[in-house]
Image 1 (spheres, helix red, strand yellow):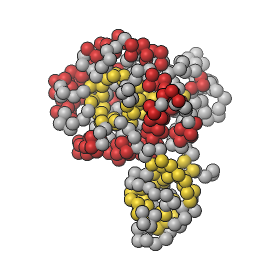
Image 2 (cartoon, rainbow, N blue to C red; image 1 turned 180 degrees about the horizontal axis):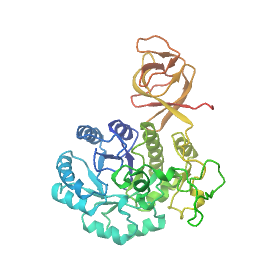
Image 3 (cartoon, helix red, strand yellow; image 1 turned 30 degrees about the horizontal axis):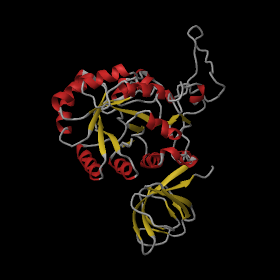
Image 4 (cartoon, rainbow, N blue to C red; image 1 turned 90 degrees about the horizontal axis):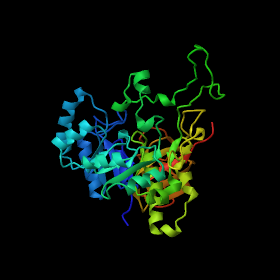
Length: 410
């Protein structure tokens, strides 16, 4: 049985490393041009080279996004970019524009090509069309049900891979093809600069009643009727695998390393449990609890089970739910003393109840009883960003483990 790929987002080199360590089979990244996440840090060519080596040394893959909709002025830069990209030993590029595909064929013909969800692939005929153009993998539109995915799988060549998003933010516009940001903020969503106006507050105004603001739902703060819940398919791993998908994709190149690592570790655990014994596989409710410990909105299954209804919208707030703080990364661990060297990412106090998570779904909780500064002096609080401290651990830890703590009510 070919194991399904778990594909993770990586907005920079650090996130790539954590995604791989925590169980991703592949990552998708963006260079500093031609990706749809201009606000992410993204990768220089130097960091791409380091990231590809880090992944390949561990038997993992790296895909690079080229999925903007380019204008004439972009083409010369695209030619130059591809000439550099083809020498980096990346595993595939992700694109949506036929012109970009022609450029890849001309300037980097050996690169494997994946078709972005921006291409709105919703049926087997268009999948077959793209296959004939040399596309190796189709990233399906988010607007498909399990039934439709299975039919696409049945009516396309076996060597055409299918990928689908299974977790993360949902765009209110069809496959992300939104013009609101361009019109309202002058920031082109299809060139990586989306201002996310779908999360703004709105009231309804009828054309013949100007100035009369009608609340769509009773809420003094406004109405967020473009605001979707976040996609979460952790409850449906068997159906995802049985549908014929080759790759399960997590959204979030602009999210934190904690989001990436924790989300990957949960899906990794669920996928591995299924392959151990498909017949006896059982969903573990703890997986949802773990996914809820990163910043998120309420969850939905999107279009997989049925068309979304009003229950899949968030009407009251565009804010994230954030019940836990990511507070540190383990840099090193001394087995003799039990002290772990920590890079602080949020304030840590002596006496805090903390949770430690690691790859392979490792996890335990403890109290911070001893905390030392970089000179070995005992301290009560670590308040400085990326401050190096030592914390006494009750169990062994390793590099890349993460620390978090539950937020206290204000």
